[in-house]
Figure 1 (tube, rainbow, N blue to C red):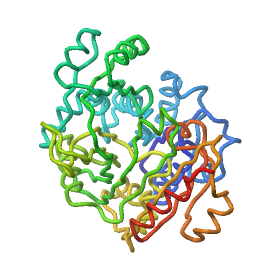
Figure 2 (spheres, helix red, strand yellow):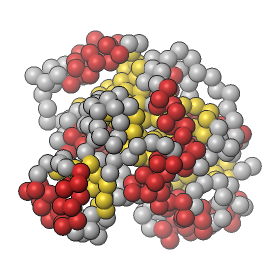
Figure 3 (tube, one colour):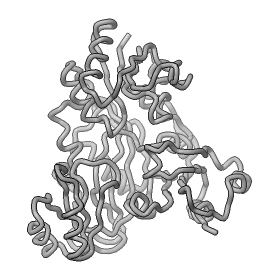
Length: 397
């Protein structure tokens, strides 16, 4: 029996499904987390063979000892994953320290985590990337702006989501950013791209073959969702556009991705932009070597009438999957914000959309900044219905 160590199997709250499918495939699933066992959801408990509680997942020595305990008790650890952006570097260090070869190692991390390094691999894939500079001095920022022009965007070179991102439109805002930036954090400054964020999401086997692929689209500004508390709205596409598919597959090859669930982000240009492309074309944004966040995997299931948790677990256990896809639809997500007065109540949304609403509920604080406090997820057959759903659920009094 192969040993799979899963870090933080209880968060995000849907990740027990990865563990369940691994266990159903005959693997020994060993969980490490910082929540007391008795407080774990019953689904988490039933999906694990054993659970080791640490005081904090941030404490590498504690997590190392937990993995060492499992290795002593059960033998060689074959796989170690969290499927979580926050823990990717720790995952890689643990694999390196325990000689677990089924995943990225410490030396692989720079171009997986640093936006400046990602751009080099994206260029290898033949994709346009925004001009950029690493922020070292205010004068250096001014030189970059003189070349690229306003607006520009500044964000941590190694960061998750749109937090601590700045859209800078003039000299005063540039000086304010430089003063407000976090000391000790390396920032990257890029030319502003007027584009719609879209993604390529895929499960890839050990030879680099695609077992499953789909994607999502975020019509609004992700930065405004985080920084301005706009409602979070995005959708899983009914059918993946061919240009997104080509860009995604080229990126898989350029990064040498194997045995992973990935979420690659691109811009689809809203207007012609010199040096980047024409309106409607795809250009690179960033790579995420883990599944789409939150309930993204569930949305993929609903949109494709399949089970990506099983496809991923089949890839791990058998390096293949025969899980079929069924009818396709759009799967739309709206995350509403506490403190706003909406036209439709919770009950009215459920009544209006009926069985089309596949999930709704409250999001934990750790996810709410990016994805809203109260969410609604619906499958809809046509794009016009997606747009109407967004408008209705987000409409304010």
